[in-house]
Amino acid sequence: MAILGFLRDFPLHGYDLKNRVASLAGHVRPVADGTLYPTIKKLEDAQCLTRRTAPGSVAAPRHMLEITQIGTDQLRRWLRDPEPGFITDDNKWYVLLAFLHHLENPREQALVLARRREFLDQPAQLFFDADGTPVPPERLDSPFRKGLMQIHRSTNLTEIDWLDRQIGDLNQRAGYAVRQRDGD
Amino acid sequence: MAILGFLRDFPLHGYDLKNRVASLAGHVRPVADGTLYPTIKKLEDAQCLTRRTAPGSVAAPRHMLEITQIGTDQLRRWLRDPEPGFITDDNKWYVLLAFLHHLENPREQALVLARRREFLDQPAQLFFDADGTPVPPERLDSPFRKGLMQIHRSTNLTEIDWLDRQIGDLNQRAGYAVRQRDGD
DNA sequence: TTTTTTAACCTCGGTGTCGATGTATATCTA
DNA sequence: TAGATATACATCGACACCGAGGTTAAAAAA
Image (cartoon, rainbow over all chains, first blue to last red; front, side, top):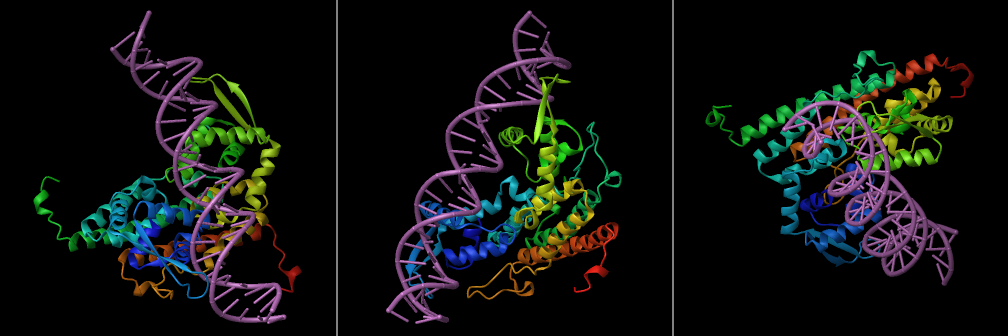
């Protein structure tokens, strides 16, 4: 997703792509050569991108990569209907968010944000004692577990706040007609 | 780490363990049977845990798992000197945090928190334009990228705040002797 | 009594990722 | 001119993880 997402902005060669992916997901989870180049090849085989050899500006020749229509469609499908992990895993979610603008339709964008919003709504119950009963934060012995739950709660609220504002904006921009669904 | 960490609290059988891991890292990144059971076997082979078959309280017989001294030592090593990913990847970091109390020594705990603190300190530069110059948040076109950086910043500050308080507490509890290192 | 359900455990094949290694090329330095 | 460095691409083996499938056993439902 990150590869096609970046290429959708402008053509890039593999090495540049690698650095951009590394900066995005990256200082968190750098991408190895052995991951990137085979993936590029897979995307090329699937006709999601084309490559064009150009002289290297500094060193060895580059393979300039350009996204195709098929690739753009694929990217949009991934964004419009993301796998569960992209909603629930923070790392993946942030990658998705970084390219959500490529999903041009505000209504569709809002739907994706709503899925995340729904996920964040369910209260996190992280720890249980020996007999299986949930342990509330205040009864946790470990200050680290306490902090973990505190931070988790606080950051969730921050994101929920942003999501709500954003979803509102998007629905307004889409000319959302609440009236027509008076059954809700 | 999660397996040994949970077993350090009290003995558990695999199925229970699975649910606990799923609740912790889990609603974020559930663990599959095909991952859990081979890993348990690996830890058993490495003598990090022992198993004892007990009649199932509800159904098939359980394998009660207990951590050994070797396992405890291993867990402490992982906690004391975590691989880079455990500092930089939020998911992994939260797992580590959930078991950091097993690293009994407050000074060692503080050192681990300090590593995370140091990581959070470096300013995140996530996006670059075509010629490679970094794009500051306010010049980003996408509201999603803007939000991404906003949320990232805000949650980082929240965690940094907690980390600083926590590190202070731990150093105090350890009877931190600043005087003796007057060269610093 | 038979079937279904749920708990609990296990295995296997496919896939994704990493890390090590290797190659080629242009620039910079000794 | 020789080496070092950084760019840029690629492959391969090892390993982790997943998901699908299968097995055993007890309780609940038919």
